[in-house]
Length: 160
Length: 171
Image 1 (tube, rainbow over the protein chains, first blue to last red):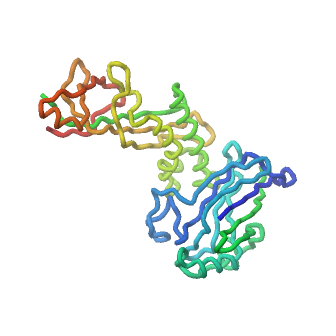
Image 2: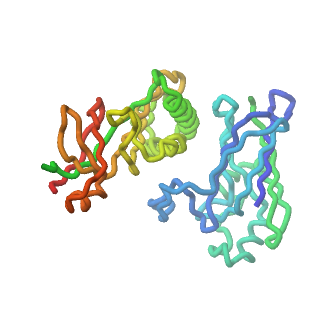
Image 3: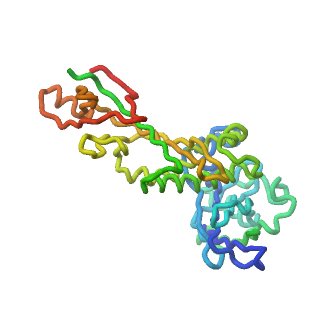
């Protein structure tokens, strides 16, 4: 999956913010995170593993591009990508999560079953405890297909 | 006359007084990583020092390991030779494969308080003798050759501050 994120600065008329550090992380196809685990929330111990975590610095248009996999899901949460955005000096600007359109996650989890073996997700955006208060700003646009792969596009507004 | 098989360990402290370029890179990059991780672990910005975070935030001790990722590339540049510990010709000669990185202290608004330590553990060494306060050493994998009465290559190494013998085995 290709992930294209644009960081926009509210204090500058929502123009693209250059030089921002975008840190993203998400779970694997089974719903497990690296640098985490060995506990009730995630029994698989991936504490000393680094994967599906990445950082990029935005270009003059505020854009960063990652190549990753389509995230799986885990019990009690709708599928999502974590994002932490810092300014060029490393100061934290925003911690947020990106939500997925349900029709696409359902398609992936029920048809790409050679890789995604957990079946349908148990939590949807509407009843997710992070997204249920409204996720219009967090909902990404996805294009593509299981066969071709997906491209995720999303804009995130910060106050730099 | 062989004293035994040993492993040396050297604790290298790196802080704002770092003078060599390699140390400055480690200092700068581990501080940057600490600053990012600190804001991830303490998103409300309640704490300023590493000590406070360790005390109050569950799992903040993961920062030792997470910050180490910023130093690993520089540690690889050492090409498995412990820094600062040299033979009498001034050349680093002690091999290591294992090290332990540790955050000693830091402060999110005062870089001068940032301090990290890297503990290097040598590969096994044969401590043959002590010559004028210096250790006469041969690589541990030369033990058989030494026992067969063959000539082996040796080094004379001075003990320096923060250098210790951490493991000993009688031969």
